[in-house]
Each structure stands twice: as C-alpha cells, then as structure tokens.
Length: 253
Image (cartoon, rainbow, N blue to C red; front, side, top):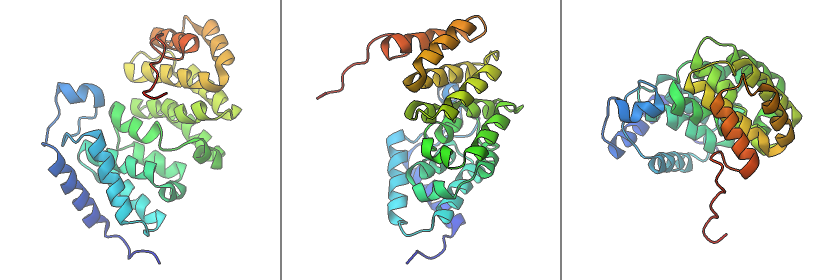
C-alpha cells in the first residue's frame, strides 16, 4: 500500500531546512560561482551530505508513488531558491527509477528554464538519465536534444551536449553517436567555456564505443573544433584520460 499523498510544500520546506542545517548560508561570490555560475545563493553543503539527504528521504518514502516523487523533484528544481535545492531535485531523480519513469522530455525541458550554470545543468543532464531512459522514448529525446542545441539560452545548449555524455559512454547504440556528432557540429564554433568544455566532454565520452569515428572526425575538423576539445579527446584516445597521463590504478585493483 502506498503512503498518503505527499504534502509537497511541507516536504520541500523540511528538506530545505535540513540542507540549511548542514551548511553556512552563502550568497554567491567568486569561489563557488566560478564553478556553478548560477547566481543562486548557497548553503554550502558538501556533495556527500547532499547524497545522504537524498538517500534518507527516499528511504523514508519507499512506498510513495513515482509521480509524487517526481513532483517533489520538480518543485525543488523549479521553485527552489538555493543552489542545493535545485541539485537535490536532480539527485532525487538520479536515485529514483520510478520517478525517472514518470518524467517526459517535455517536462524535463521545462525544468531547464530554472537551472543555470555548470553544476545545476550537469546535475540533471550528465548522469540522471541513462541510455535505457533515452532509448525508451527516443523520438521524444532526440527532438528535445535537437531543440536544446538550437536554443538562445546557453545553459540549454550545454544541456544538449551533456545529455548525451552517459548514453554515448555506456551504449553502442548508433543513434546516440550520430546525434552526438550532429550536436557537436552545430555548437563547435561557440567560444564560451560553458560550451567548449561540454564539446570536449561529449567527444571523449563517444570514444568508448566510437573511437575510430571520433578520431576521423577530429582529423577532418581540427581547425573548427575548440582547441581544448581536440587536445583532450586526442589524449583520451591515446591514453584513456583527457590529460594524456595513464589512469592511476584503484587501491586493491
């Protein structure tokens, strides 16, 4: 039997209070905003604490319907004032398969209008939705990514690139690879680092299953691609890391 319907306002308020108790409220500034670029105020909560809050809430609400979990995640991202509220919404989706199953490309697109900067965009777009999620509604996702790549909002253009990072790294589905090349080709001439680093990230991810195709693309487009993307992707092809240095073995490996 499912839990009683969530009081979304109360749950949101409770999570926000928990986040605030874990950090010291911080109103932006160079140190944090140089990474996030969001302009939203911070509580300065560590990533491990953010994950702990997420797992704790989901554990306490195991019987809650996916649509309600999704509604809370949506509320955090759309109505949240602080950076951590918005990221917590994405983390809830990342940990809750039933909430992700209730999401749709149209709904995701609406959330992106309330996220800004590297960290907020990447928290939703880099690893929440995997290859299986995207493949389950490929026409919807392909259309979404195409629209985002043409949007006037640079945050949404970054999202178009980053949404494909996990699918191209973890799946050999040629549809992900082909759309990745299309989006890179469309955005490769942009100069802001928000885009150039994302181009590099996507191309490096694509090397996992399409190394020869990526190498050929670099050869044909070296002059028009961001220099950082060419350098890091060639290093990834040669050594397995973007720096060109062999990856350190994990302890016990």
